[in-house]
Length: 134
Ligand SMILES: [Cu+2]
Image (spheres, rainbow, N blue to C red):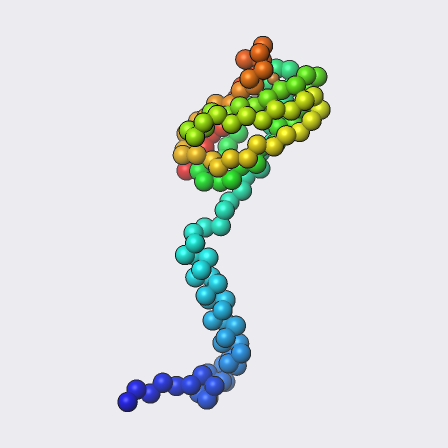
């Protein structure tokens, strides 16, 4: 015969925590285990880049692999600008008229350096680098 102490009737446990507290602790533990089992929560990275004629400021930005990047292109120039980033999954582009902000969202790829540039004709000098860290 195996003796299984009841939580409700075991005086030692009752003296420390009530059964309802134990149930709450059990749920908290299960929630924590579920979170671990599903992997890390998604990390986010906000980056702001200001476009003027003919530059990006800053022209070197950083993110970490796996982060969800929200890149805000702030066009503070007198003409339209765009930002195209060359990712392993393909080029991604966002455009903004003068005085307008636009957002490009993507998952930061493997560690490395990724070029971004303005694809409007005559704006070839307008470029920068996204450095992705491990
Ligand atoms: Cu431009």
